[in-house]
Image (cartoon, rainbow, N blue to C red; front, side, top):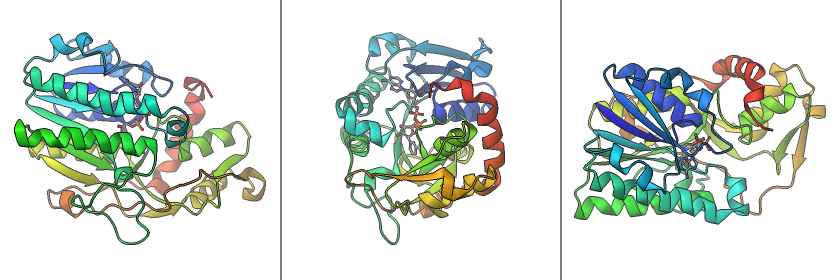
Length: 316
Ligand SMILES: NC(=O)c1ccc[n+]([C@@H]2O[C@H](COP(=O)([O-])OP(=O)(O)OC[C@H]3O[C@@H](n4cnc5c(N)ncnc54)[C@H](O)[C@@H]3O)[C@@H](O)[C@H]2O)c1
């Protein structure tokens, strides 16, 4: 089985590469990554060492010329590559549209031309916008509220439209917040951890009352594997329904470091608009036999240990 994965040297991409490499023993992986600030080749070096099964290309998803000739008749192509940080998207929104929308479109069109059998777009629950109570199902309308989520929603709309004309075999997955090792310390959990490793205060936006759910990168990668194994197409939410306020996460991590939360948590000005709560309904994916196994509270010790040992991998 030949699998093409973009964004494989990043946080979630590297977990997906590991999962497919381990679960599909004869698979061959072609990993493409631009290696932005968020990526590190060390995240996949243990896989790339297996030259018979894994090949790495350093390229921008937009430069299809760099990968076009290598994905002929591939079985699966998974687009994980993205600019992923909401705060950055306010400062450089064009880059987000370029990578997340135009890049996804070029990736998709190239896969079609090269007759890739199955195409997967990794999207986000942020495309729905905020949900103050209840949760969004896959049938709900998209209502993105920032340049990052808008660029992801735009990609979904373009890619989704292909199923009508081309009858393409497309899978779109909308993940909620993901946690795990290798995540760039601009996101809440690794930001809290790395600040405390450096004995600096954690910065929390606004009141810290924004609510998010967190799914492990391993659980997310397993969900994708299962959807592929069961040959599913269409849209699937992937997440869990354990809610945390941002402030709770910061306080919990302070406790792990035995730091006084009053001294080590600082509140900073919030974005002009920040979705107050995200929530996705996961009944559809549960029906195919997937459910989250990991828990953030249980995994935090291991993640903190990883950041203590690998802090030098990040230019922060
Ligand atoms: N992190 C989350 O909580 C979360 C939740 C749901 C969905 N997602 C989605 O999962 C995907 C991966 O997220 P992540 O958190 O690992 O992001 P990340 O920013 O940590 O990693 C993104 C990867 O994409 C690569 N990349 C960026 N621009 C590229 C380009 N033009 N061409 C090729 N490679 C490029 C980067 O080098 C990096 O390896 C994204 O599509 C994101 O929208 C993330």
